[in-house]
Length: 129
Image (cartoon, rainbow, N blue to C red):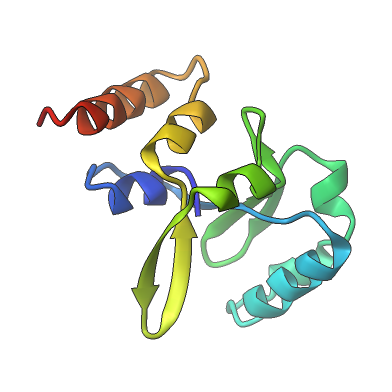
């Protein structure tokens, strides 16, 4: 899990309108992601092909809430991020999210909200509050 929810896991409170997932883009893994997401009320993920995450920068799944599937974010690929990922266990399920350094790299865009997110993460890394 990346984006706004990953920031929340790092202790930064801000709103987010979607769930961003960095996933292994292999067709086998995308099939597993689709199976998990099929539990969502509208089953909108049924329209996603197993090769879409490899083909497109972002695959947006519009269900009861928006889920964006990505193979990489700002040049950080799933395999790289997975190596330093942290995790939060909820109801026995581990939810991986990027460490602060990886998340900073994923947020190096021109959006003002990303600049604020990066400032928070850098302060966290430096030990400042």
